[in-house]
Amino acid sequence: MTVRLCIPYPAQILRQKAADVAEVTDQIRAIWADMVDTMDAMPGYGLAAVQIGIPLRLAVVDCSDERGKAVLMANPEILHASGQMREHEEASPNLPGVSAALSRPRAVTVRFLNAQGQMEDRDFVNLWATSVQHQIDHLAGKMYFDHLSPVKRKMLIAKSDKFRKRA
Image (spheres, rainbow, N blue to C red):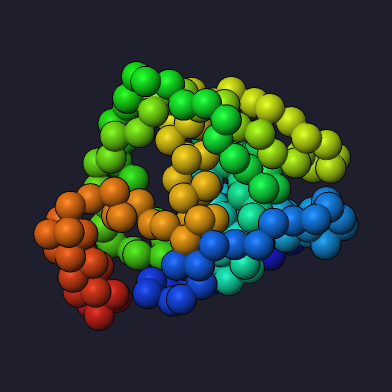
């Protein structure tokens, strides 16, 4: 397993829709393993393959307190989202030094190919739901700040640019 570098915004791959995964192979499992290592090293609650430069619809999420409970997903799609919203501070290693509070559905039902290559439907709530939605956005070429007003988005990106120049 390897910790991979996160691609800095505004790299084009972060704005493109990722390709579907045809089947779960050993190569896909190896990418997932690297993604989990990278997520744990950040530390973060999730990671999409595009964030490390791989244009495939792969995501990992682990919001457990003890870690080691990552959900590995290929081609995740939201089947249902609750009407009840939840606010949470979101960030991305692709745009370091900044974060923003976003409101997303508190619960979602997601369909995905799991590590065994089987279709699975799973319910996620609270932080798990937020992280899954965040990763699915990445796979569609969206970043969390796309949910902000144009003025807030511009300020956030400018603040991150200053942060990177100082680092």
